[in-house]
Amino acid sequence: MPISDLEGKHVAIMGFGTEGRAALRLLHDSLQHSRISVLEENTAFIQQQAERKDAFPEVDFRSGGAAFHALEQYDVIIKSPGISPYRPEIKAAIASGTELTSGTQLWCDAHPHERLVIVTGTKGKSTTSSLIAHLLNASGRRTQLIGNIGTAALEAFAPDEPPEFWVMELSSYQATGLRCNAEVALLLNLFPEHTDWHGSTEQYYRDKTDFLRDPGIRSVIVEREKRHLPDTITTLDTLVTYNDPSGMHCIDGSIVERGKTLLDASDSPLPGEHNLLNICAALTTIRQLGIKPDEVLSHLNSFKGLPHRLSILGQRNGMQYVDDSISTTPESALAALRSFPGKPCTQLLGGYDRDLDWHVFAEASRNSNLNCVITLPGNAERIASTLRRANPDLPVIAATDMKDAVAKAAASTPPGGVIILSPGAPSYGSYRDFRERGNHFARYAGFSVED
Image (cartoon, rainbow, N blue to C red; front, side, top):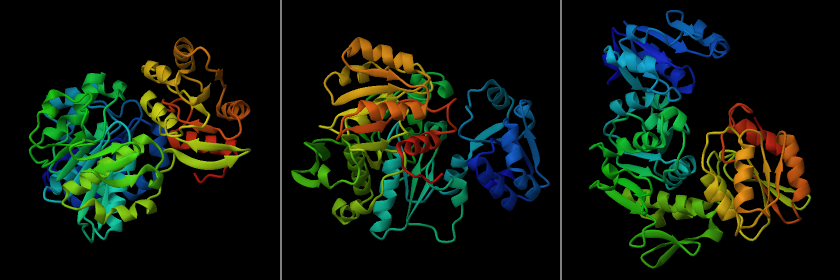
């Protein structure tokens, strides 16, 4: 839908976070004869944006529990990612003829011929998309990072100097229902996640991957094992695999292609086997753009890992502290543990309970370097009981809060050990987001942080 198609219509911006605010600015600057409403259920959030309301006196701001009522009155709804399209009031509006779109869709509709790289996956997408953008920029190819990380897509709607490449990170929320053109779309992995928003694990997999079938996507890159991929994706003619022995792949701590070692893990700025896979995926994507990996590999060491993603904070009393607060699944918690082989690790686990399966983590802990587990409030008892059944000799200690958890971890870890916050669960109910959780961990461990 071109922005010009919104002219003269009653448009609702549903949700007033980063993307909602970007949509308001764009519509305000682009449309002359449209009615614009901003809908936000969180009244306090709208009040915090009071200065924005003053800047747009003609906009109808609605907040509170009734903000999403009677959506049928709007011609078009621009929905923010965090709001599920499966909510009954949205489904009723669509059935009545209201059009539903998103900031991501509006951007894609306006940029069908750009050299666009899309990156998605349950885990690793922020690191990998940032790495691809970094390697392209550092090698002299001007690249803009947008989407779930970097700049909101609508903030980069019409830059003064268009880049050569765009790298767009997509969450499952942003991917749902999307139709777009892209030179390359990279899907890193799929694990159960966000089932409350999507309704089921199977629907999450469909929503996350359905856009890959769009004929406007010229290459789709997936991991060679294709775990959890629907048949509609595994049979695509556009499919390319990474970590494939016939091409670029990881083996014995190295990235190898046709018998040539491109990178040894000891030379990587990112710890862990899963990050070696992320680098392999990034290089495969860059090769698919027609650029040889040799042209960008020299810039790998200048890449800085992202905050709260296996970020090494430093040493205290002979112990290393690692902030992996972004970890919200058991799979990512296990990847964090495996990133420090040969060192006794104490891991802080737990948070908001989504009824995810911890059995694989528990079984893997039996033959690992896991020294002790400190559980955080939320799903602590679920994790503890699963661990005790699979690994009864493993110490599992309950903490009342983050301060208590850090103190108990320090008391339970031998010199030379590693204390990892990789909770495998969201922070809902205890923290505003994973950033605040990670910052609290760092402070209680004795490290200064910037909010």
